[in-house]
Image (tube, rainbow, N blue to C red; front, side, top):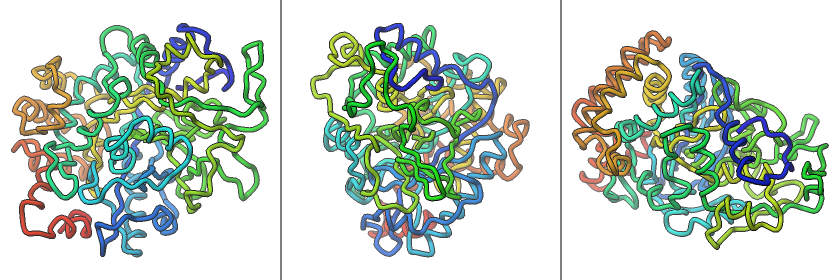
Length: 515
């Protein structure tokens, strides 16, 4: 979603949407990795208590790896690491996660690596207008759960020499990876019936924005059709100065950036994203998430309406994950940031209109910025943005997320590993209902277990040539031995907590998964 002309350029017909979609597949041919980690945050002494964002933000330390810090509507903490080759990307984000864990531990808080809050009800802390519009559109209970109670790991990958190849791999291997890393079987302290309860939540949201994009034919054409046929969640209601001019090129004020950035030492981005050193930064592969003019960044409004899905963004704007906007406050209280400095507001669209309908009937023709915003409210399992966002993975243990990131990166970007993984996953390919089956049964589904076994073998063979450390390779092997070979998704560990003596789940949360 890069390379936009100007924010106020009008989108007049389907051809303009197709051009936008094609730009989403124009990016780096490299092999860089960017990882975005979302975590639910718990009070160590009272895990059932909600934790205010301000309490978390006030405790955050400088981050040595330079990750961007953002918050989701329910207070989920997101760390978006700088992109780079596999070893460096993993190492830098690992150092930041450890710094955050230590700082939060000192004030009685802990990170939980689960995809769905197992204990607390949904509670929205951020009340910006785009979140209000999203909550109204998605409805209760699943909209609230998605926005406030889910967490994911989002793996961002370069498009490679032929974007269609990695696009297809990321989709075909999706159910296998969902099953292997399913880690959200609980809600309200009880089993929810799914190994990945987070996937269950997504299954119950608007399918025009959560279903997978078709992988047959040209991916840019498929993405354009998806953009056109998805329901519009909300429309921006700009101030008069934003209204495009009659020539269609727009006459908005070009002297300021959409995020309302202000110069000087006290400057602040409107969405409050910051890296660990107080800088505005990014974490997409191939440098795709970079500092720059927010008007040219589709996620300048903030993160996806969550990630989801989500997800922060001068760039990162949850996913994932991957809920309307990232809003990392860098210590600022949630109420201190306006929706936009120039008065833009969002109005929920309740009549089921798609973007195609908007093109045909709108009294105010949509602009490229409207289209870019629409794209950030769509949460398919894989989304193109000048790189690939892999958005279908549950949040992982804060001490072990590296396994998920490394395996996903290896299987999609390494040609030899991908060939072996696709051969292993072939019995699952094209099987109707495999995505929800993966979320519901995890590795207890025999075909998915067998496929995951082949995929992990391929990843283990590939990781040394991708520069992975011996320690990381050992961690991947240990994960395979504990979870993949016996057909035991990580979710099983959580299920055993609630089947044992009362109080084991709160103790597990308070002990960062070690109780």
